Image (cartoon, rainbow, N blue to C red; front, side):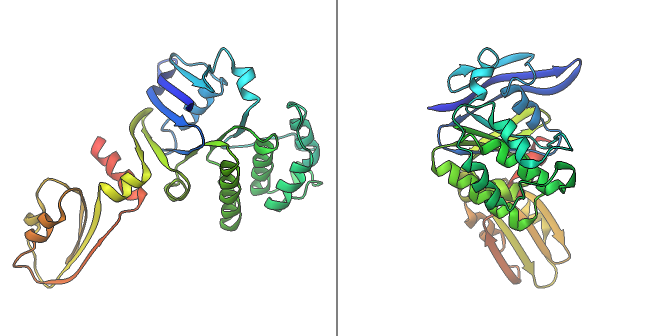
Length: 294
């Protein structure tokens, strides 16, 4: 069953493109990554899903229901963390969270205390006394306090220190194990790589690729680093399957898709100092897709 289904979703702001013909699905119980640089269309897609803005064309459903027609009903089962959070500065944290809880039925108020303890957040401080990282913690608790079936995270770790980021990831994994589906939007590729099972790559408002992260990393590409002893012939690497080719003095780096024996055979007669073949990072694969589109 698909919790989210997006079909040809398009949003224009006057003559300016927001997103165009975006299509992908998020399956029940998965953590789905949505990656692209700032301005690529991630937040526009999410805001349209939440019916905070209306699409120019296309459709989107959550829990099988149209996001526009049933927006109020759907949102009761969604936890949303925007990329930036803003609150009434003079309120205490606990008052903000109690106010948020009042919008939902049957919220276990002890959950607020548990989440605050996990994130090391003082509930009795005023909002204007909090750092940006602690304000982000308020947003995390606000998004999770009602135990939502779907968690939508838009650049969730900005402002969090590395230790707190790790606690946050563990918290999201725990919620997922309990049955929550997660849509995780980020431009920080290592986060998506370590947390998600599938990923959609967006550029300039359009989806470039939707694929299993394991397939992206394990099956498609190998990363070669070849260090030569003395002079070498760069023309040996002018064949299909090689991308992201760079040269640093006597060292060559590239990604290769295909039978690696083709690369090995091309090295015959050359004197090597070192040869390293490894799995590329998601970031290197991501940049490959962007360069290929360009």
